[in-house]
Image 1 (spheres, chains in turn yellow, brown):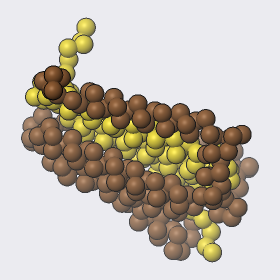
Image 2 (image 1 turned 60 degrees about the vertical axis):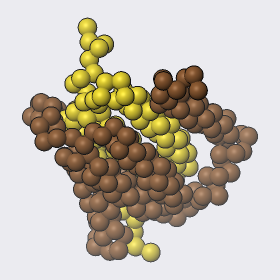
Image 3 (image 1 turned 180 degrees about the horizontal axis):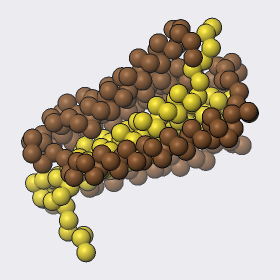
Amino acid sequence: MPPAVPTEFFVMLSMILFALGAMGVLLRKNAILVFMSVELMLNSANLALAAFARQWNEMDGHIFVFFVMTVAAAEVAIGLALIVAIFRHKQSINIDDLHQLEG
Amino acid sequence: MEFNFITVAFIVFSLITLGGAIGVVTCINLFRGTIWLMVSLFGVAGLMVLLSAEFLAAVQVLVYIGAIAILFTFAVMLTRSITSDKMRFTRVWVNVISAGILFVLFALGVIYPVWVANAATHFPVTDAGLATTTDLGVALVSGSQFVLPFEVAGLLLTAAMIGAIVIARDADDEGN
């Protein structure tokens, strides 16, 4: 059995993925794409949690990833329902058009 | 890190993950964005296998690719929001530089503690003795461990599904 990939590499990958997701959230104008970028960030956090769980030989990281996935599924269902409702109301999901709550 | 099968697999899955992520961030056609998201999620599933988290890899494929990415596809089709060339990005350079600064801060926050401050206590990882899927399943239903969070997660999912139906329902249908 060859030696395992060091945890640092997984953490670096997770960092790059999180930065890409954050860039997507900041950069995109379409609400669905912003949402997809949030999913990327959640995935990078899952990756880091699983990597640390292996590093410390603990199961808690895996449990946490499991619950993050549960919450992500709930969040996507609600978020996409909201996006569809907003689209029906305003005929647009461009986030620059959604500014009723601006002060 | 020497050159072996696991290293090659790590590099391949990393490239799949990051390529998919770049595709999501830069895509023009929203539908292609969802496909890129699936590619990226698949890469993460492969990395989960490399981390000896087979159950999480299976859940990743079933929940993320099988459910969440499909929901995104439905949302894209329901909103007819295939974006045009203009109106694609906001304030490109400011945001790219902000994300770059975020990445540099992350890199500093990881490189300093791992390679400088705690380099002496660094120990190599092994895949031996890791928790198996059976351990995970027992932990989720045993009274002394995670059964309460597990039940709360079930309640959360039920509430979210009912809420999604209520939110997405057409207001004109109320009387029927």
